[in-house]
Length: 149
Image 1 (cartoon, rainbow, N blue to C red):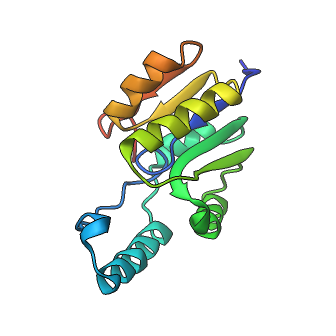
Image 2 (cartoon, rainbow, N blue to C red):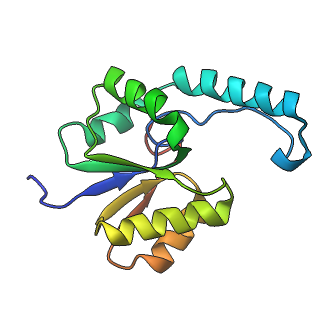
Image 3 (tube, rainbow, N blue to C red):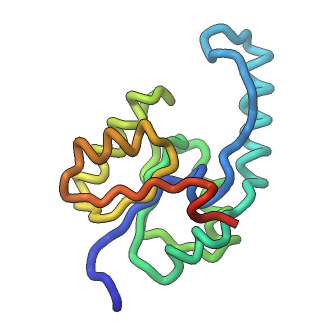
């Protein structure tokens, strides 16, 4: 049965494997370490390993992506989606720094603004806050044990 509402998903950790780059806190890194981190992150995102079973949840559905990635990752993200034959209606990128509080605020605001009825998220702390603050949205916690590969 077709649904007539928009579903949403996080990107890293739901559609593909989270990157596993270990790094110091941003404000403690010198310019050289920051540049290396950014280069490693971009390479990691380009090669992100798809969670194929999860991808099937979104093919041929009306869905959006709400991600903690920033606008400077748009081309990498668009290319990855295209390669996986995913066609989101929109991708909403973070506008602020990547703190947990900012990620939560970004996802809550976007879910409420676009009346998203089902949202897939892998971070348990974000799941908890979305469930608390988005009462009209069913938040599905995605773990490696429930979906993926």
